[in-house]
Image (cartoon, rainbow, N blue to C red; front, top):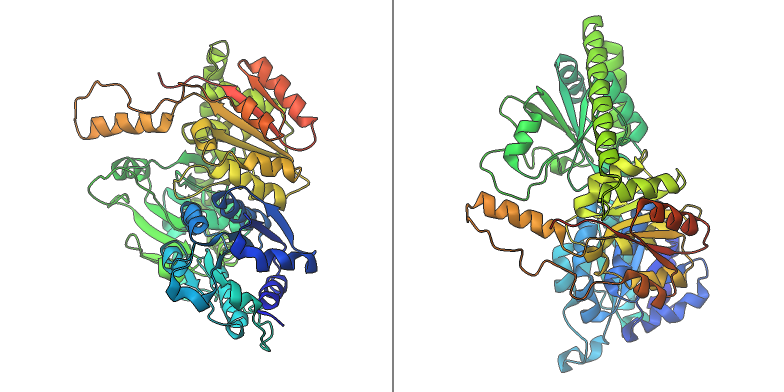
Length: 554
């Protein structure tokens, strides 16, 4: 067998069924092997960043390890940003790049570079096999590391000559070798005692709850504790239904404001790192001194890593959360259970009041022109089926997406991590590949869409059922908000305009761009036009683009 045979059969042995790639010359051994492996679907993209991003979202949406194949040094460079996003998201992706023939590495051939050094900072492990005999062990270890908690991307360089060398070393697998130990029973009881002693507990819920399939168990624990639930400001999954009354929104991005949000609680439990994410520096910890902070994580490495941790549990989240829910329900005193019910009722009342206030604001804004993002998104959600899957990169309109579509489960919402833009349009390819029987709605800003607009061609090429909703406000609105915050925080006293943050000279035409890549498209400027475009999209096979003209900041 050749090295490339071991590589391909290693993918199959580890349950891989999809490769996302941008073909290149050094990738010929892989491409030439696809005909012998019809069980592997190859999704063609026109940029390496799109391929890796789609693979990362596919891993999240399918629960499988995915593969992205990029083109040697320049292609790997194109993919580095979204590899960082996959690392932050905990997506198990095997990123590969063809490498030049190792026999003339001292002659500095075209395209050759130190790929391992390039990839190492944004992966859990980076490696280049030196001969075909190493291929089996490298691939076994790559899958093992990618799927060990915390999960994340691994990089494997594939030299052309190594792929074509003969070897007698057969495929080795890490399948069936995954084990997450149970937490210490005494520490588990301390967590139960902490929750039962709390007067007003809160959970900061991370993506690991959804990616581990623990949503239902987590919801039970939340309700049993009468706990308030907060999400990270940049979350990639939906660990609790957005319309659940105990969900009280996303935490801010500054330590002082996070402290204010958590100040009314006596116990705060972070589940799935990170518990908080900050953009602007404030002195002091985001966790108030009056709060007892505890953690539940997939790995002991994160316990007490960011903040001191009074109680910490690590292991399989569904098992831990189920054990805590049982412990709380079986050991709760009647007085505590009564107080819990009262907290749940208070949170439900707050939820109703907030929903009514938002509905009143929507009614007031309904006739304004141009539309607000909230009005446009509610019109879009009302016109589409209830079971759509959301891929969100709306940035300043993220909360409007949440409130319009109300994602209610682990498999109903996906978003990028790490803060790099361009993940929404590209990531939708991966979600659509993982969920071919669902309609995917990718909501993105116009600036974000331009980072990976080539993904529209791939959606058309592979006939994917994706509605791309582009929020066209003709600006980088988030940058304007952040410049306002910067000027206020550093007291610059500037009344200058926003430099280089507008996208209106010339205006981007997403209808024309989509049409040029084989995707039907409509522009909508009113709620009625949004509804009509959404109805057309729902009755059109394959992808569809709706350009939503919405109000900007200025």
